[in-house]
Amino acid sequence: MGFEHMSEVIAGMADQLSALVAESFDALTTSEQLALTAQWESFTRRQAAVSHSMVAGLGRAPIEELGERSVAGALAVLLRISKAEAHRRVAEAQALGPRQAMTGETLEPVLAHTAAAVEKGLVGAEHVRVIRRFFDQQVPASTPFDVREAAEAQLAQLATKHTPEELRAAAHRLAAYLNPDGDFSDEVRAAQRWLRLGRQRLDGMSELRGLVDPATRAALEAVLATEAAPGKNNPADDTACVDGEPSPEAVSADARTTGQRNHDALNAMCRKLLASGTLGSNNGLPATLLITTTLQELESGTGHGFTGGGSLVPMSEVIRQAAEAHHYLAIFDKATEEPLYLGRARRLASKAQRLVLFARDRGCTRPGCTAPAYHCQVHHGDNDWAADGQTDIDELTLACGPDNRRVKPGGWRTYKRKDGRTAWLPPPQLDTGQARVNNYHHPNRYLIPDEGDDEDSAECPDSDDGDESERG
Image (cartoon, rainbow, N blue to C red):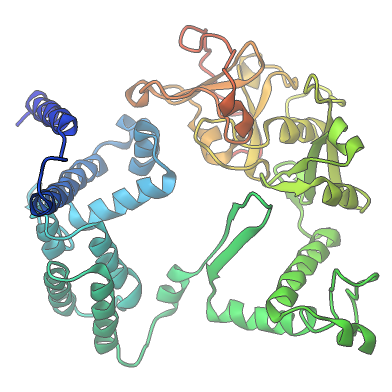
């Protein structure tokens, strides 16, 4: 079956789907609607098997033909999905998709029984996540192959009869049977560690979640025993005790919960570390807290400032931060958004130019990238230094390390639009008419018309910015 035939099959399915969408289900009885719902669920579950085969096939393609450095990267650009979802699809295809031996013969999937159940439409995505998590996190790698095979077969069979919640309970019990002593290697523990700062809510608060290894827990316990003690680092005090022992009055007046004291201790530890000057530099600037705002908001005392990490800080806190040392405050004129200070041109961007870029771009300018300014490098938007590019603030832009390296002959290309914004063009095989500029770090721009130049017809030089020394 060739490409044209497969494409015709998909097009035919799309036509049939359009006809089904146009149908009205109001005339059906409840029992008929229930039957169709179950039939449709089985059909949609089976579609996952097609995706697994397609993504598994991309995994065997030459990397230079993908237009990106990985299958996940190509999927994220081509399908406009998140990096996390792209990596999930690749990992799922590696476990459930067909494999190919070095001799060219087709091998069954790693989770063969689960893959067969998916192909029959008997299990869904939630069941698959439970089974994959069982092997990734709950079973030691030293478990014999035949035992793992038997466990996978049993879980796949249970998944065809039970809900994901029931399957999860059974998987936990099975893991306890297979590893009764709870012995896990350092490698298994290390693979499970994570710490994530969640999205900032409308009220400015953010959720911090994670899973720490034993060594990190032990260190954190020791630090919190002093930094989160009653009376220590209390923002409610006129003069908070940040060093030494708190006074008895401060201890008795401390009405914070344990969780609130832990929070304030973390804040204090971060501030001490930033003020210590031991963190070195980050992409050409001292590792410090960078806040940008407009002159009008600073004078009025209202609104928000933006950090180099992409978060919002209330103006009252911005003013308080600006009064302290070891911080940068970049101010822009609201009407023109022109920087009040420009650095001089040279091959590598100066500290002043980086400050301007941090405040102007706020993060990586490639469409779809969410990397904040702290994680970005300076990129020449039109021509690199070797191609007579100028290290002038109007020609510079921000790009995270991975995206900076994407700009090369045959890969991504960038150019500066007439309005000064940086446009990114993907490789031809990944170009589906995606957005050329990134509004993620300036969400207000999503809501207003883009009055930039005609991006599809604009001349775009083959920008290969390989001259920035911190890049790579």
